[in-house]
Length: 594
Image 1 (tube, rainbow, N blue to C red):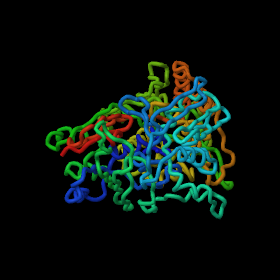
Image 2: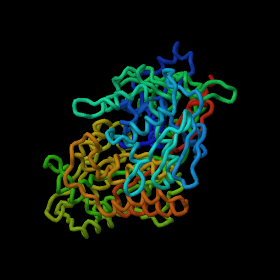
Image 3: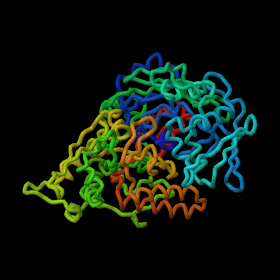
Image 4: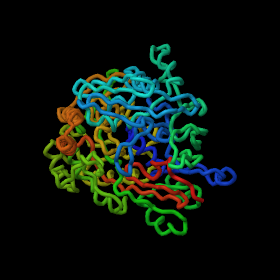
C-alpha cells in the first residue's frame, strides 16, 4: 500500500513497506542534525518516512507507513537473508503428521514493554479475540481464511507455554502466515474488545489511535514508541524487556534510539543525507549517479539488492456497483475499463522500456508478474506469461476491434461518441511515481486517450482507493514476498486489498450491484487451491496459472521494478541488505561502531 492498503499487509508486506519506506523512499521535515549533538551520546539511527501513520493499532492498520515492524513480534519470524523461518516469541514448533495441528512452545520469561508477563493467554487472546473476531475489520484475517468455505483456524491453550492451532485442512502457507501476525497484549486490550460503544461495535475500533500517549502503547518488539510529533517525527526507544540476547548474553537491540523524520519531499531527504543529517536514504535511480561518486567522501555505502520485491502497477476501477443509488464510477468510464481490449491497449501503449531507461536510469527491470522475482513461484516470460511490449499500433487495433473510434482531431471516442478521458491518481511527493504518471499521460495521448494525472496526499489517495472508491485509475506499489498467499487479500474477491474491484469493508457503506468477473473468481479459487496443496511442484503450477490469468486479463498493468538500493553510513555494522526488506530488517543485531 507505499503500497496500498493495502498496501499489505501482513508482515512481509508490513516489514517490506515499513523498512523499505524507512530506507528507500525516505524524506525529512526538520534538520535531524539537531539530534546528533548532546542527544547522540546514545547509539541511534536517524532516518525518515513519507507521511504520518494513521493508527497505532496493528489490527486496524492496512497501509504504510506504520510503526509495527519495530514494535511487535509474532510467534516466529522470517530471515530475509536465508528465506528461512526462525523462532521468535516461540522457541519451537511441531506440526502433526496429518498437517492439521501446529503446536508452538513459547520462550520462558517473556515480558511486555510495561514489564507484565507475556503468556500463552496473550497468544490465544490475540487470535481468538482480535484476528479471528469478525467484529474487528483486520486484513490479518484474509490470509488466514482456508478453503472454499474460507474457514479460520482454531486456537487453544494446551498449558502455560504451549498453544495449539488447528486448521480445517492442510494449509501450506500456515507457518509463513504466522510470521505475519504479531502477538498483542491481552491485559491492555481485552476490555476494549469486550466493551461495546453506542453503535454496538467493540471499543477496540477506537483503541490506540495516533493521539494515544506513547506510554500507553504496550509492545513486545525491539522498540517502543517514545514520542510522536504530528507531521514532524517519531522517536523510538529500545524496549528494555525485549527477549533477544546475543551469544555473550548482552541484551539486543544494540541501537538505543531510532528517529523517523516526517516530510513529503525526497529531494529534501537527499539533501539531509548528503549534509550528514540522515544515517540512511533510499537510492532512487535519479539519485544513484550523484551518490555513487560520493561514497568514500560521505563515508557511506550504497547497497543494491537487485529488483525490489515491491511491484508497481496501474489499475482501473472495475467496480460496477452503486452506493445510495449513485454509481461509484461514471458508467461510461466503467464500460471502457471493463472492456478487456481497452486494458490491453493501455498496456501496449505504455513504453516501459523508455520508462526503465529514463525514469529508472536503467536501474531496474520490466515487471510482468504480480509476484516478486525472488519468489520460488515466480514465472518469467520464457515460461509463457503474456508480455505487453510497447506497440501503439497494436493498441489502436485492439481499440478499434472493441468499437472505439477516432474523431477528426485524433481523439479516441467510444461507440457513442464520448471522448475517452480519465483521471490517474497516485501519491504526491514520490518523484519516481510522478515521473511514471507523467510518461503514461504522454504515452496514452499518442493513441488518443486523454489522461488527467493527479498526485494526491497519501492519506487522501488511499481513502479514495480503499474507502470511498470514487476514482478512475490509480498508480501504486504493492509489497510481494516469497509466499504468494501473503497477497491473498489482494487477489481474493472478498479481500481487504482487492483494489480493482473492492468490496466494502466492515464499517463502510454497502455497495449494491458489485460484480465479480469469471476470471477474477478463478484467480481467487486458484489461490485457495495453492494454499491447500502441499506438493511444491504442484503449488508452483497453480501459481503459474494465476500469473498467466492476471497478465491475460490485466486487473493490474505491471510496469517496472526498480533495484532495491539504500545508502547507509559506514558506522553501522551488521547490515544484511535484502531486496525483500531493506537494510535494517535485522535491526536487533546492528551496531553503531562510531
